[in-house]
Length: 264
Image (cartoon, rainbow, N blue to C red; front, side):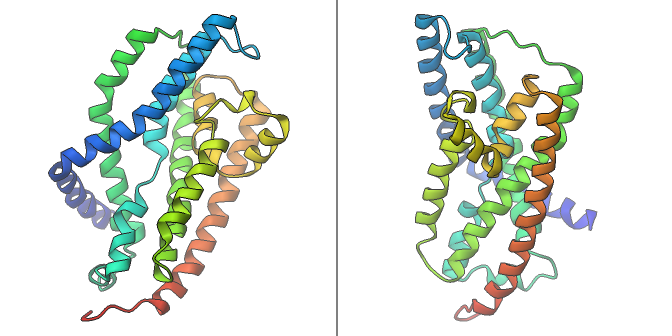
């Protein structure tokens, strides 16, 4: 199985280099919103002194950590897979003796992230020099962040895979995805740190999976979570991963019965 993933990695890594302009557009998409939020909140914090105890340095550290975390844990599954389902070209992958989403699509996501991060690093260095945040990151936090980032990515991957599978029944899958993205932006800590949201919103965000792939890893890296919050979030990541995979496996079997492609 390792050789299969290795081969898919090689193919998708080579493919990503053929679409460098597309990569730059996605990178710009990822950068614009967080940088705008960073500029706005640091400006407000500088004017007010602090916002609910968060200083301009806190906002700078938060958003500059959020930028790479967002790239690592986000998913491009719908961009890779939806058109294949709607056009019927996924039939080529269905004839292979491996799961097309858990192999080819997964490796496509990872290859895309790797190349995006290479292009992102110099931009991130410039942003750090501009905003000069004080980052005190402990080695233990970075070590704990590795499983948190992997689980966060897999949670996003399965959520987006489930949305993409809807394309087997309807062509309006993009509307569902856009709605999910809007909800995610409100509840994952991208728009504003969850500590600034009302208590009931924080409670909803804690229960739902969105913050597990963004706010949680960011706060973990920045050492802003107590031990009990770490245990709770890691437990939620495991629970959501198990639930999402179970629903994904169930829906995949029914999607295959629904699928038909002319000439396949």
